[in-house]
Length: 287
Image: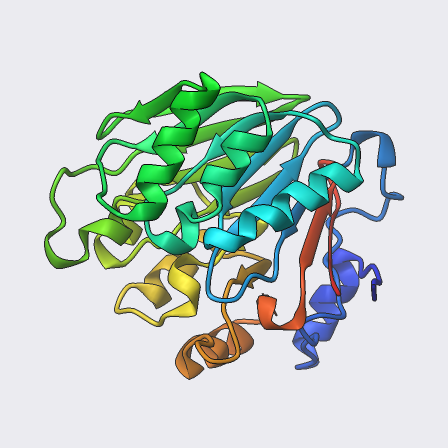
């Protein structure tokens, strides 16, 4: 795994000189102080093709954000098993597309889970139905977040807010625009997770006025939309991860836009991405 730390001052100098970092080999640091391992919060974004599967670990808790496609539950199971983790505190399924809910049936079968959050709609897909059935069999309750509402909680000093969509009908693209949005603030560092939010949902997220963020899980697998420029202007991420595959990569316009804006962009085609923070420093690595 390649990793190096760049101070905020050095990053600014490099930016002024027109030097940009290569995805997969660089990191962002917000503080000149050494990284405090005792306060580490670690996000792992898995290389599962054009699908979302992530695990966020604080000192004492584990949160799974989406579970990829049907076979990807094994990847989550192995990762947690290798670390000796036997339970999941929170499972968030942003929406019920097969590339987000696909591995959930296995995850709820293999692990006791404290809380499961999902958006307030239903699906008739096999992946969704298997997830619901296995959760019921395991006695795992599922909490639907009603439209316009939000849930808040705190894990080891990290504050989480989960925002539901604002409508019950988005027309043709309703599946993606039903995506739950997760915002995390840990001291001075902010993360934003957007599921597959398309134009209508991206506008709703902008209307939340969350301000700038340090890390963005790029919405909708890197598709360039009419709202993309405004969305990036609103949240001004320093680093982003795009979940995509070699066959279904991010749009060229998205890649160009991220580069021109000086945003450190990581694409899961290059392997798993790890984002770590101690509340003042953020370090990204890939491989």
